[in-house]
Image 1 (cartoon, rainbow, N blue to C red):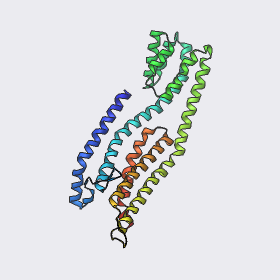
Image 2 (cartoon, rainbow, N blue to C red; image 1 turned 60 degrees about the vertical axis):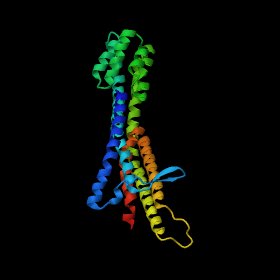
Image 3 (tube, rainbow, N blue to C red; image 1 turned 180 degrees about the vertical axis):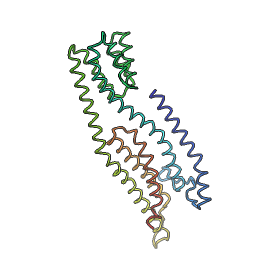
Image 4 (cartoon, helix red, strand yellow; image 1 turned 30 degrees about the vertical axis):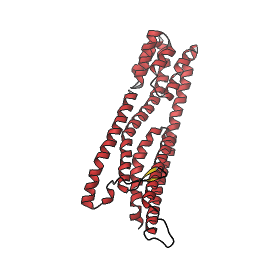
Length: 297
């Protein structure tokens, strides 16, 4: 199921990018016609700097940025769903570890205890436990049943859930082993939640850093354009402001991506959520970058 969802996400991203690239030129023509904003049109001006293609017009920058955002939106919805499932898995794992010892004491067999425990859990974790119970009932091998049932579970959950197999080898100490693992899992989950709350304020700092860079880059390009508008005595070559703007545009994308990855990794511990901040920060930073000359001058 997870693999199918990932494939669907990739397809949606490709379709979204294609729709944006096909639709933006028409949208830009409408904006140019009604508001006189000819610069939003993508002229596909590309210049080469040491064999590296550099986008040199603002309309194409907007089109490329929009394509990146269009690709990130489906990825974000997929990542958010996976992150929510991971948190649910961790909560249900704790319930599983606390319920199972009592069920083992009251059930005639381990397979029956696992089935009873599965009925008391919520989806999607209950399906893993139920599958494990059925495999164990047919094979009699608890470790094999666990490996086959939990092969698609998140790695952190799989590591902690393996304590069931370990506890089964301890004889009469299964309650002690599972209660200790449940306490550790609960403490770990609470610690992650506390860390998220404390680190959430750094999201704004990282976002403002990207916006500040965009403002600085936009002002720099505008100042260079004004300085080179009139050739100075002794100046033999002119700075190509289009190339300069394109290079700053590339660096802006890198800053936004790096900031988004830092936010997702440090705050949430899940890099795929960087797609959310790329989709938010890139349009904002690009708007500041392109509007900086108007704001300043």
